Length: 152
Image (cartoon, rainbow, N blue to C red):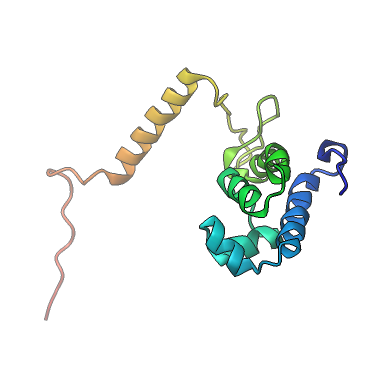
């Protein structure tokens, strides 16, 4: 078994190694994806998606697979690097701390807050509440009335 640290390889090395190890241990134990899924209490689709690289899975998934497949913690050992790759691949989370923000579609740079700063989190929540309020706002009672529909 190759124990080369994933940090020495390409950015997707840890998730690739996780998939390879998961499939190798599953087949070594003589289990189908469905049989493993039943034992770890995840769907067969989840097992298949993780093995094929369509999904990253979760830490809970890694822990349960380690227990069922008796890998001596191999999948959990890879998990921190897989989670880091998952965060980097998730564009909704924005750049990591210290990276330059990407411009929005209009070309104006988007200010990013440090998600570890509690004040920044509170400010972001307040902004979201205000935005949601604007989206859900009902028209004022004295506002313009819609035109009447001619039903002739």
